[in-house]
Length: 414
Image (tube, rainbow, N blue to C red; front, side, top):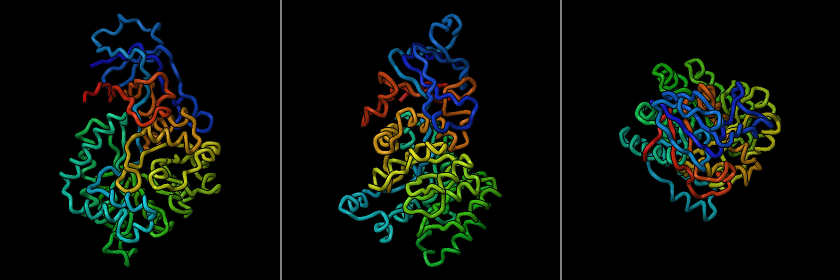
């Protein structure tokens, strides 16, 4: 089936110009077309231009969607989430509101290990049910592609349960789902005094199985004091590469550890968080064009420092935004909200925030060749927004401006 989007007041294409990512001043180039149209055949974009260039007689049997007074832009790509979880940590939110720190709560058995307990108790069927509701809500907020990490199982059985659930969701749901293995999210409670034993299980048991069964595209690690040091992270990421898992790094979130430099060393696709990245880490990321995935929702939710977006962009590092949707440190899947926080707290422009949530976010998942922009030949993922111009998206926050979503050339119905 073919589709035509016509009478678009403002089309935001975010053109890649044949490149994997946008960097520096290029992040402000949105490729705006006023009074525009987009033609789609099956799931791909075949034509983009101004309405006066379009011959209506050429539409043939295509379905026509009139986008009068609407803004259209690429579907949002959320390249860092932990949305497959069970249970709630609202009690920890209440504790933080009275002054307890994230680390203090974790030291008392809360944090990641709290969610691990609930995930281990949940069936795969239940995990999928919870995730399916969240995916539907994300789609309604304009997210058409999302990464989902494991990391709340922390043993072979439960990590595999999570990854199988993620893979099945990818086959069953409309959203494009990308799977990441993150056994190195924390040390499980039963092995707290035997960290090396757990690292060995990741290296020798989990990664070979995950890679051989193609349960994930990426391998991620939490490179942080009290979690996994640089040497263990390097070993895990290199082993992942041997089994076809591309590296990602949770880097410099709670303290400076050298995670950014490690990400550059192992040619990671992305380094995520970066709240405590140094000048040397920024230079290393720029030298390898590692995507810096910034997570403003975490800093907002935990009242932590924000990543130095301006320094990263000015240094030529490709910057992406993601929600880090998870029950403990960012209980939000709204990409427009992440854009607002990036603009108000991280000094990113609306143009940079949009690029960071579309094309560059797709690059953080190795998908910018087919998603993240509205260009001929790419998959037809788009959001239709009831706003007067694109700047209203981060400006008018707290409201969902998404009117319709096009996913792989199909207008979704709620």
